[in-house]
View: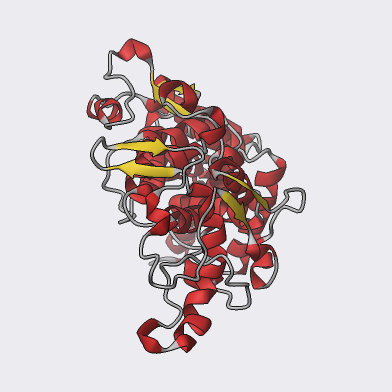
Length: 388
């Protein structure tokens, strides 16, 4: 190749590289907008939506771009449905039908309802009456099955109503998703009602009982059905069983008036009358605690589980599920847990390094100062992961 031809060849290559870099730089926000939409809605954006998101990103309004993506009905019908569904069943599977628990989570996020009310509010979301669906029932899930089977747009057709108006629960007996029919069927059925406490702890404070086991707490509220000498060895109780039950049993007492009746397939509430399940196997240790009412106490406000960050403005004691829901949702662990779950959903991974963990802490602080708005959490997490 002649020197002049070689020089021309180099000049052409440089021009092509310059043009490629220019296009790449100009196209950055557009590619980011598409990635952001994919993370949140799981489907490609329309040209109009993509243009609007690109404009927002060019203007430095990345959270606004994410909020535009969340207007797509797939964010509600798919992303949020898959986000909430594992909390509604013991298997923690996403392959479960829409129900009053998951619909209420979706509606609260859509409407920006403070999410720290999810365990205490007199609230449930139902389909719009204009849809001609089966009425909400305490005895079946037909209403929500019809919503899902007809692929109703949950971004538009979910309506908030007081839970006490569509059930026979008084306002004081409602406790958000804990008194939904789906939660009752999964966690109040049979057993001893400890399942409701354990799964609420797992789903909304991101801790299972093994992680909060504390053998230093008083065992005075552990019920009669727990052996003090399992297998004839009291050391097992003192070194293991007491660690979970000393904290769990005083708080699970909040559910003493609730049950899921298998015959009628519905939640029942018996104010003033403790459910018989609280007295099963009373002969296992007859000197154990006999539940007299639904008063609960949080023994974990002291000891190692004080690190869960309980709200000092709350008394740490009360009666019934609603006040317990306020106690749990007022903790630092609750706020942090919601952010971690959202991070996992939109980033498709756990927070894995110091940058991720710092971002989770930042979003958690913003979550609390922004009146527990979950849409902002989704937006901020998606924006972070868009570039990471």
